[in-house]
Image (cartoon, rainbow over all chains, first blue to last red; front, side):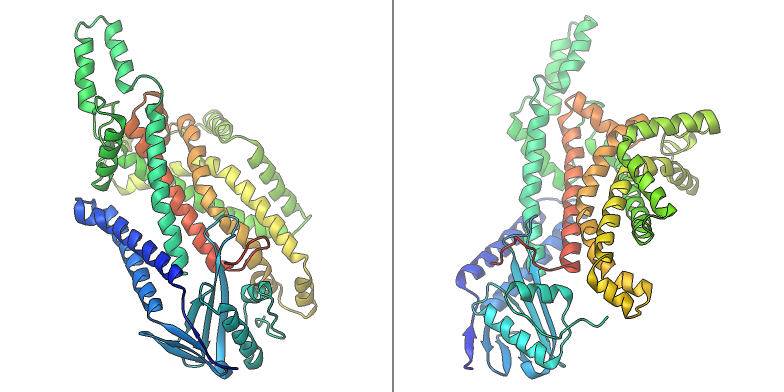
Length: 168
Length: 331
């Protein structure tokens, strides 16, 4: 298996930048321009901090490339880290949607190997399916415990991990 | 998760703007304004300065300005906790609602806590003791709660309390504490008076929650993995809590968001019947007199609480069970 260089598409990053900027402006503008009541100011500050954090995370994603190799998944960027497949001990695949019927959502994969930091990637990432497939194979080999939700989400992507049950 | 929170919060902001605009414009839609009825009274009394007084009042309340202008003034005022003047008493809305708002929040929070705690305990008990007397009693309470309107239950309790026990159930505190500063005695009095309104307002919500939790948990308890776990000798409590309860609780958590508007709208009529000094009766009178600033402020608070309730419910659900559903499509 060759290494693959994966990045978030420009369109996704731009949408996230737009969301973060809109949030920062909507929460920050009243704080700057008006004499805001202190309770409301606390709410607006919390919102401002949330969107600022999201802006930073989007910028980090922009500067990060993911290298999927036969032995590792490497996040090469300002907050880079490495996951070794043969030492994988954490795998979580979650599905999020902002709609009431939970349609049009996105997946988020978190993987980590012993002693290392987690790598989190969203389904918008090019080659996301390949990463999930490789992570599932690694989980099968290392016996990393998978939650009920993770197994269900893997199944929905056509990936079955044999023999990995959450300990009862 | 961060992306989920950001998207949900970002949706909340335009939602609240749209709700505030709709509320403000709709309350102003009927012909006339809040000064109309006051002027009619003055004219009926034969006051020769009635029309001049009307012009004065309209200028004082800003009613001579176009609606969009008044709306923008109101929205900007919200940021510094100034919701304009109320037409009813010519006092700032913020002064008028502060104590009532606190009592309302206290009552609604207590009601929601009552609904969750009682329905969780009874729902789990009813599901794990199916077709035993406890289950029948829980189902009976459920049917009673669902079928009796809250205001009727309030009237029955008022009558029973007064006639058979000599109790005065109305109000949220003893008369000697009204308009008095906060004291330990006042807190105790409020707590005592909260019991009946909380039960009355929370009854239908509790009944619905009990039935939903019971049905969900029964579905889970009859699944193969529970039978296998039992056959393997798992302790009953661990077998209940580890998976079935976790799965059955999802619809319960999803209902949290919808509970808040139900409780608030249900409490309006109950507050009138039980003479509770909450926002309900004031909202009703503000809507009748077209007191736009007061009514819109109340309704905006309800909208904010509802939107926050929905956010909490969605976050809890996303944390509890982040799995794809059938019919949903992955991006």
